[in-house]
Amino acid sequence: MSAPGTPDDPLRVAIIGSGPAGFYAAEALFAHPEIDFEVDMIDRLPTPFGLVRAGVAPDHPKIKNVIRRYEKTAGHEAFRFLGNVDVGEAVSAPELASFYDAVVWAYGASADRKLGIPGEDLPGSHAATEFVAWYNGHPDFADRSFNLDCERVVVIGNGNVAADVARMLVLSREELQRTDTADYAIEAIASSRVREVLVLGRRGPAQAAFTNPEVRELGELVEADVVIDPAQVELDEPSRAFLDSEAADATNRKNLETFRELARRRPGGKPKRVELRFLRSPLAITGEERVAGIELAVNELYRGPGGSVRARETGATEDVECGLVLRSIGYLGTPLGGVPYDADRGVIPNAQGRVLDAGGEPLAGQYVVGWIKRGPSGVIGTNKKDAAETIESVFDDVAAGRLPGRTGSRDALPRLLADRGVEYVEYEGWRAIDALETGRGKPLGRPRVKLTSVEEMVVAARRRSPEDRGSSRD
Ligand code: NAP
Image 1: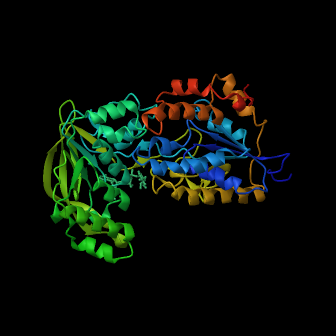
Image 2: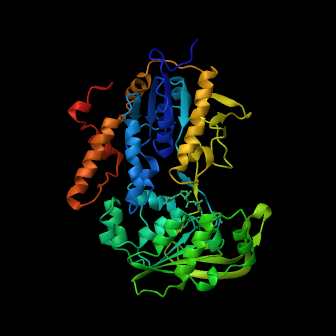
C-alpha cells in the first residue's frame, strides 16, 4: 500500500489544540506542497489561538499580531477548524484517533503547579493563571472573583506571568480601556483599592525568570513606582560565580543591570507601587476565613550541582499583610483519558514528538507538540522549532509506512459530533465571532470587546456570512 498524501488518499491529521503549538504544527505540515492533506484542528473552545487569546496580557497587543500568521495557515484549503469540541468528552481519544492517520496533541498546560504550603486553598489565594484567564475573558473563568478590596496583593514567582499580573493590577481605567481586557475585569481592576503589589522571588535578581523587556516595562508604569531595596541587588558569592559561568545567559546579566537601575531610582510619587523582593519563599498563607497575610522565609543562595544556584532558608522569617495572593510558579499539564501521561513532569511522554506508551515504545500515529510535549517553558516562537521536530517525525513515519491507517471519510467526525448534539464551530463561525467582537470594539477605540461565554460565542458563530456557508453541515 502506498503512503497517504496523494489526492486520492490525503494524509489526514487531527491537531488537538489551536494555540501557537497547534498552528505551528499545521504550518509545518503545509510547508510540504507535494503532499495532499486533510488537517482538522480541534479545540475545546469555539475560539482559536489558545494562550494568544486567553494568556497574553491585554496590554501587549503587538504580541497578538502573530495571529495574522496563524490566519494564513487557517486559510489553507486543506485546513478545517472544529471548535467547541471537548476531546475526552464529546469524542474519546481512541475514537478520534480511528478517523485520522495521525493525531497531534497540542492542548498545552492548563492547570497550575501547587506550592504545598498551609493556607494555599484559602479564599483569596489563587493561581495567577486563573487571574490571567479571568482578565482575558476565558469562558471557564469569567465568573471568578478576586479580592481587589485590599491595599496589598502578593504575587509569588519571578516569571513573565508574575510580571504580567503585577502590571495588570496597577493599570488605570484609561489604560485598560484601550485593551481587550474583559469588561468585568476592567471595572474590577479600575475600581480596586490595591495600592501595592509585592512580587516575591525565591532566588536572587540574577536568577529571575523574567525576560528583560518585562522587567524594563515594570519601570515604565504610569500609575506605579517600582521599588527594589538597593541591598538586594548587591551580588552574593554564588550569584557572582553564576554570572561568571556559562550557566548564566544574556538575559540574566541584562536583568540584573535593569534591577540595579530600578533600585537606584527615587519613588516618583505615583499613587501605586510594585515592589520586587528577592530571596523570599512563602511558608504559609495566613487568615481565618480568607487570606489576611503571608509568612515568608528569608533565603540565602548556595551553589548546587552543575553550576546551578539554589535557595535555602536562613531561619529568619517575615510576615506581610495582604488580601490577595497570586501564586505564579508555573503552569502544569493535565492528562487526557486514553493518552499516555507522565504525572511527574505534567507532559505526554515522547521522543522527538512521538508519543511513547507505558513500555517506552512509540504509539503509532500519535504525536505531541508545545507545552504538553516539553512543559510550560519558552515564548510563543519557541513552539515553532518544537513543532517542526514533531512534524519531521510524522513525515519519517509516513515514509517508513509506520502509520496505523484510518477509517471513515473526512466527515466521519463532524457526523459523529452532530449525532451527539455537539454544535461544533468551524473557522467561518470563528470569523463571525471575531467580526462581532471587533465591531463592538471599534467605536470604543478598542481592538475588540470579547464574548466571554461559550453560549454567546456559539450563537454568534451561527451568523456566518452567506459566502462562508455551504460546508459539510449545511
Ligand atoms: P516561569 O517562567 O517558569 O517562572 C516560574 C517562577 O516561579 C520562577 O521564578 C520560579 O523560581 C518560581 N517558582 C517555582 N516554584 C516555586 C516555589 N515552589 N516557590 C517559589 N517560587 C517558585 O513560569 P511562568 O511565569 O508561568 O511563565 C511560563 C512561560 O510562559 C515562560 O516561558 C514565560 O517566559 C512565558 N511567558 C512569556 C510571556 C511574554 O513573553 N511576555 C508572558 C507570559 C508568559 P525558580 O527560578 O527559582 O524556579
